[in-house]
Image (cartoon, rainbow over all chains, first blue to last red; front, side, top):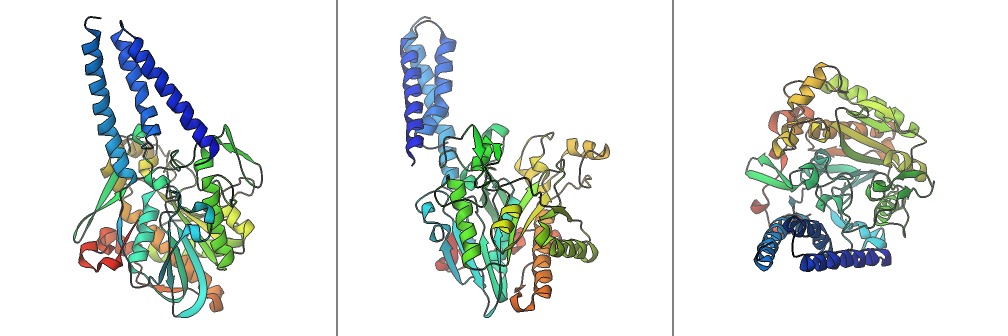
Length: 51
Length: 387
């Protein structure tokens, strides 16, 4: 795996952590909770090297 | 929001269901192996990484099959799944692998040329993950791949792909397109390593003919044809005229553009002594204004929207209610390959390539593609190759 590819995985992981953190902090809007999780799916699939 | 804890727990549960359901199917697709029965002509199996060491251990490494005749002669290399969403090429090469006997010269087969793309998917366009074809012993299942290599194997994409060595600016996505990265380089992005390794085979083995097998949309002008540069034009023209006269189907000749870089039919000819050809058979499944991209549509090529467009003369191929079935597409490829080999052998008797037991257009149209695949459970284990 090239160095730049590793950097992109780190960026993906960082974005995933941000989404999870926002999901944890959100207390009012159900739609936003659902949106955080929907956006998280492709990021998790990439980190797990599935898609 | 009342009881946020419970709401969050329910949402996380749903998230996990989607993730596992979807992820598992994609994971299984990427690791699904297609059994292939070694035919009577197979003499040895190598890996593409044997010719381009940069591929070793990557998902782009792929088997290279050699069918060598007892009598020395010329050599031809066949690539399919350069674009892994054009399966007629793959099926044509696999049935050659399972059936062909080479009497003189050699055939080199790379059925999964873009191996990574063959394990990539296109769920966003509603592509099926697999397709099955009926055979005499049951159904044979294949992965449906994507046009480009998987981002899991080559990532990130550049903003613009700068072709090597011409520095022509191409679309960013073409960095993962194995028919834009010719002639490649040993230390470039993964797809350039793939094409470089193939060039090394052609240069090292002194290959006479290279045939890159594709499918193209019915609304795309470069379809149902043989694409050839000037140096291959004579043989391509003779092959096109012969299949039209003898077998009754059209496969006209398109000139390889000199100003569009990275294509197999351009760069193989410019960077080696090999004569390149690229075959296109119409694949309605790839057209945009169609109904759902179902497995049935992939196999029979029947679509009411394309039929309507054909009546308005908007397609580049004849199209009627019979569609453009898989057996016709594979049959065209087999006949054109055989005709190119025959025409080359006629002109170069000392480098001729004589093959037999490859079905032609009419036989495939009558018997279907599956008839020519052998049952992996009915042969010895060492005859079954997994790809």
